[in-house]
Image 1: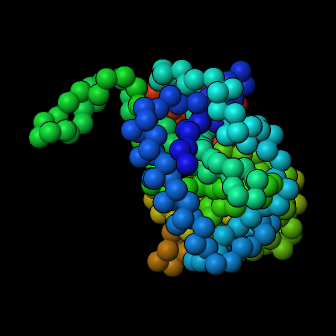
Image 2 (image 1 turned 90 degrees about the vertical axis):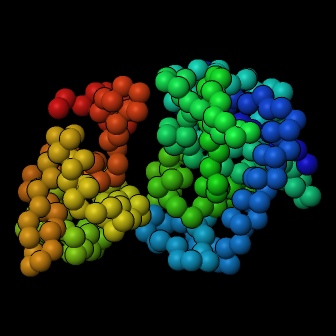
Length: 293
């Protein structure tokens, strides 16, 4: 079995593109990715995704009847039908995921996916070098680094993944998670890192958008995994309302008491803001419009 390598992009005219590989690279890539598949498939228990449960070690999340709207399986079955990657830095920034796949013994197409981080682009902007034969040589042309692990697999309508945040960088999963209930909003406000002055008002301000964001933030684990000083520094850079106060010896995030600032904070915590590595300009990801600092 030899695996091809494809990219899923945000470009509607070139949604799926294929990398032209040398036979040597294709052979090594096949070994590399099938090894990752073996590691990925070692999860002992599958948990149906509901937008709230975070898998423990040995557990994996899944969504049944996932709609492969981009028809990734068709590219795997008919690789010659896919356009070839445009080897420009601008196009590489449109890549959302790398994927490959094969037809199983049961006749299903199994797709192996990695979400794509722009930092994995080997840019032509500057001088890129690599070590070979005891010297450093210049990298000619644009390139990328393939990650050491899979983000998700898709087979027969079943999407399996460990990390929701990484998977939704590739696919729109909004229809598959449940919005936060009043109890969920209260639970959010009672987190050790959160300070809410008026829980009743918070519930009153929690429209469907706020409730979806609370569910997404809970699922992402950002409040548990990112130090508050780092969040505060980035929020300041993007001019996001991010008030904190001391609760004993701990610094906590103070929830705004007006809906506009609350939504800005929740959008920030859901990581809808990023900094373009090319232009160093702040954007809101759902619109790609520049943020006025």
